[in-house]
Length: 103
Image (cartoon, rainbow, N blue to C red; front, top):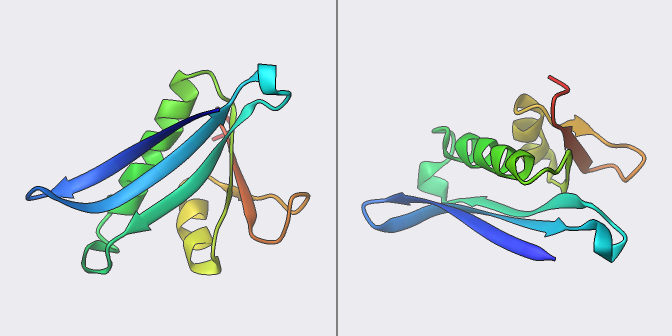
């Protein structure tokens, strides 16, 4: 498994970050899991989270992954839905997926 982090910085201060875990076929499971997305409260609702989501989507697609799976709070789920994620009821109530090329 490979993990990587993206960070948003404003005046040398990290104001947001995202973490993705990538699994490969050798492990028996192939996919990308968004492990974490955090935006500091003063910087929320300014597009920072949306930009990090877009970059993680691009990064996983570049690496050949076709799906991202995540768990989100109901508030977070609203943001992910606007970024192309869909509810994944087969996984669980707050589980969501993004499928590359579906939009």
